[in-house]
Image 1 (cartoon, helix red, strand yellow):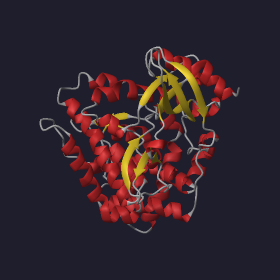
Image 2 (cartoon, helix red, strand yellow; image 1 turned 90 degrees about the horizontal axis):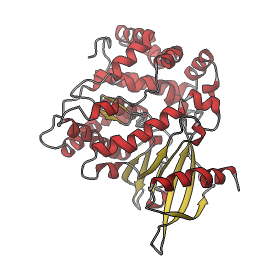
Image 3 (cartoon, helix red, strand yellow; image 1 turned 60 degrees about the vertical axis):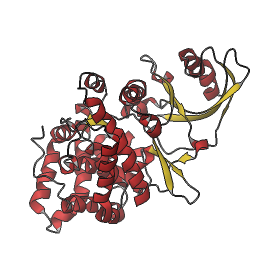
Image 4 (tube, one colour; image 1 turned 180 degrees about the vertical axis):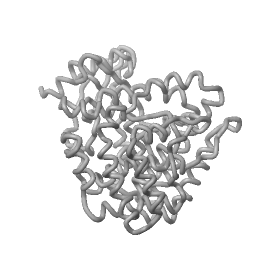
Length: 404
């Protein structure tokens, strides 16, 4: 028996059966691990694909479950760097508590894959796991595009995101007394300590897309002011993510192509969408999700031609989902839009150059240099184009210091 099989048989399956997630008094009939399946790099987990056959008590039938089982990264150094336990606790909080609390009319089931059970062991993170439905047989998969999505994919993403954010506004029409105490349990990946450690990386990566425009004499004072904000990344980040009412919603927090499964018709057009990997949620402006997705997953040309269209699709979906008597405020996209660039400035070149995680094991200074130089001219121009688009649409502010 392999170590993985032993882990399943001796720990994960007994804990799951005890929880009743597969039915009362159920037992394991058989299981098969699909070792052929490969997934893109996950920073917070390792993944096991399992076909599980369950026999329920008092029933003479075997029920089949196709499962994705997420376990914590076994490498302790890497696990601590990405704070994997925090990510597991956040995801379980989302599935166990927040999504059921917000759900209306089956919207959560429409947007997210089925969750069975999750467990965090405070003494031994190697025992942590989350069990989800494997949607492969239902036709869902990651897009074949590794970085940039076309208009069809983006418009579907905006529709589903609008539905998800609408759930928060519908919940808030009855007040914040139930929602806020739970959202306050969400842990932030970017602590004061980690932001301080990454200060140089954020600054150097930001300069990669901003300095070329300054050198060309474009919006010099505004862009110099923006770079100056990076001198105190704690304040800049805090101002951007601080929830402002009545705008704030529960955000996915990592709304990106690699966390979205699409379903396609026979002509390869996307017809369905499910969100996965809920490790980094936050209660904040909807622009947290919108800006990251729309800057990270679209080309300069697509943004130039369709950014406003995509935002309109999001808004229409949000309004059509929300009940008539709840408050849906006008969205000030520019107030928070630079949040998306902060993350794209290091993550977009990483994805374009197809070199994901090796720099995380470097010291902070060397990591900052490596990330700011990743790729080449094409990656730099992609970042420059993001800043150009934000300027064109008026989404860069003179100051971010007084956001309340």
